[in-house]
Image (cartoon, rainbow, N blue to C red; front, side, top):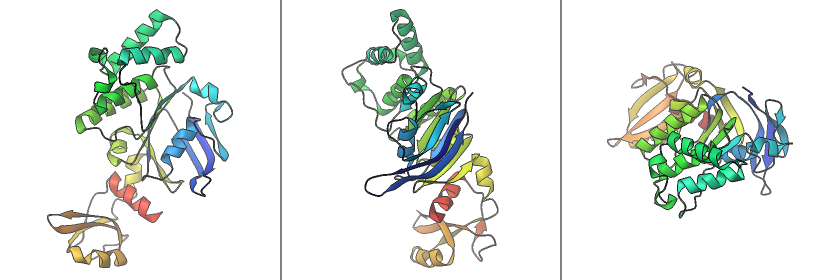
Length: 290
């Protein structure tokens, strides 16, 4: 299976915003998580990989295919689930999938019907195949989005913030579906929800202000913080003081008290207790430091 190799990708918008700054990533088959806050450059990167916008510099290769030079070749092997996935509300999923299959070059009617039905079974929408898409819940629409993204049996599937707005049950169902797809395909999951990456991805990268600040296996990345993370409950009005003295990576209110997480190479002092690092802590520490 071909890897996706991104080298020194850069993009500056007309307003001067540096959306991507020499981004380099190597993405193997399986689930790859791209984490970052809103405005970090994730969607710009996704759209550039999908050849929906041009880069100023750099290259993207899927195996031997130069994506930026041969965008039409990529489209044959790409599945794309954008952040805002629009559907025709009056059409049924069966009708719209059939129409999209024609656009993707699946001409033979019998073959098309088999593919459409197989995909509707895969995303658990076969029973509602005649219903109007306008009546679907958010989760059902997202599952339909995956079905259309899988029509051409892609080598590369891009999902941009796919779980935003889904309830926990639908999110779980969506995770299982993506994991199944990731067994055969490169799946890039772009999100600001840390849980999405923690549950699904064997490889990940954190991007902020257009730069890749860390990449690797989530468990190994968490290992870097182990033994250096401390927690303390403090009065609310002392937060600012602690932020001046320590590297506070997160704070949250619990029953009227402030709980802070601090990164320190040595024990920070009375009242602090050592805690296990999770991916959320890694993410916050990286974002704050960059």
